[in-house]
Image (cartoon, rainbow, N blue to C red):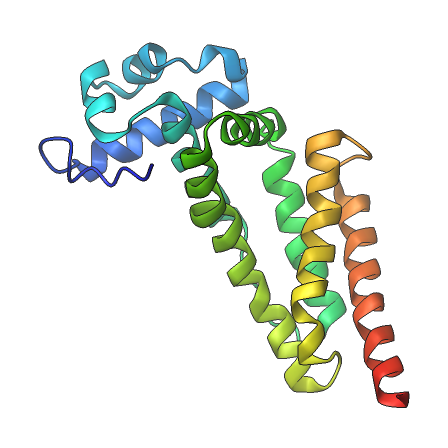
Length: 201
């Protein structure tokens, strides 16, 4: 269930909130997911444990917000004028986010969602759908340039994120710079191939 802080006492102090998110991420990246307890996060951020529970209903909600905040800082949508290079930039940025000792966190958040449907709905809306919506801009621009068909955008988004999350969740391959380039080429090539076939039909 989404907790925006309005139902849990006083409004958030944004500086304290930022310290909490930075502390949570720092602990996960340097010491591992298991070390990022609410007590430890509170201590590192210089706030009380009850302050965290007043703003977030669980540790998982804190970690989700920390992941969102980090990804928003490092993953940006570029406009290079071509689908292949736009996707390469996105894939490399996603590689940077995923390789920052955060793969266990991403897997843990999905596992939390499997056990808690409310959390899964939140994770999907605030993280997965938000990232997908930003990436959609790349494909919409490509369709406007005539590189792909507008009707293929959702399928291509599914293909891109499916390939990425298959590696994240099931470790079917590395999540690195080489993988980023390979995924970008595959999705770009698929989009252009679909457009050519549809043009012939």
